[in-house]
Image 1 (spheres, helix red, strand yellow):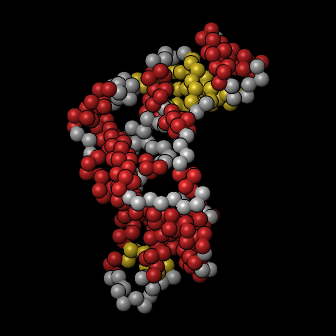
Image 2: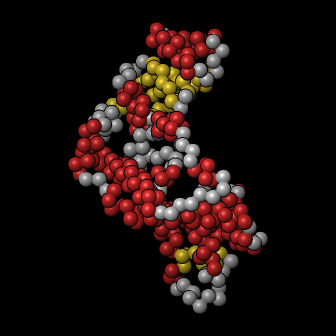
Image 3: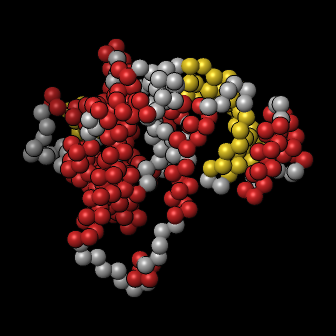
Length: 326
């Protein structure tokens, strides 16, 4: 778990280095405000890493069984030690003064501050009510009351969109997936076959209703991000989730979604009241309209992100724009 950190490129650990670089400036062996020994977890070439740093990462690890706490704490300390060694080497080589590194640190700092503002000011408003949680449970039976786990066979193709109807006709009349593959190969269409086991929550929201309505053995054609895919439900099994078990995941999902909405509204409010002046060529660029097709494509492939297959924590996709300020 720790060995891989030693091979990570410097810029890949910059977000982790932001706070650590600040800590280093006040943690030298001769500091007047030297921490009490009880607050120090480990010293690396004289630089102290505190118990608070370890506990903060332990808290982010989620629910850790008591019997595994010591092992997880050791892994965290090992990671912090590796990180500190990299930071010391970077500082010795004066990489903390490198323009590219400084720019990356400033970018990470800006993102952290923006996230902090959203978390501190909007978190309370984003909490869902009990009624909204119960309503979401009722409105999404495919995710909860009638949740299924699917064994899927997928054919990803490079078929032109204008020929999708031809493929739908072939799929509708085919008795098995090999017939579909044969038709695609005859038409010189590139095919990549994949197999997977996925819970309802791991399927794209835009496809969930259609897939949930499919019977075992049934095939269908889906179009997402301008890609044509053939999907077969090879087999499925009912694994419903009751309201008690689903509630924490629904609350987290609704909170995240509401926080995104509040963040967008807050950014709009701030823009409306701010003095924003574009300069030079950016005056022209600022007047360009956004690409709706790209935005809708991203939304179409977004996961349901409500609960994971193992029921441990909600899944999440890549953050983009204001949605990244969760």
